[in-house]
Image (cartoon, rainbow, N blue to C red):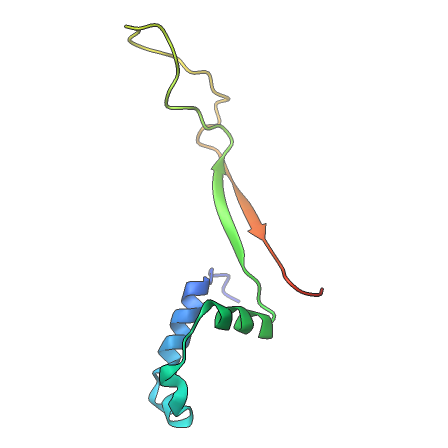
Length: 99
């Protein structure tokens, strides 16, 4: 395995590309009217025991861009933890069906 990320969109795009291959069309002439829908994708992923995850990058310290201070104040200091550039990844995964 090369560990490259694979998205649902990539799988669908590859399936569409393969469905336009002349050799594939010769054996599957009705494929031209096939809809590569989300339902198809879900079935494909289930058939081959594949799962999907979503990753979201978050920061340990996310200081606000706004604060309240006296009118006319030229500079307002905001206390931080010093980790405003440090991040972590949250992974959300979901599985439907029997384990």
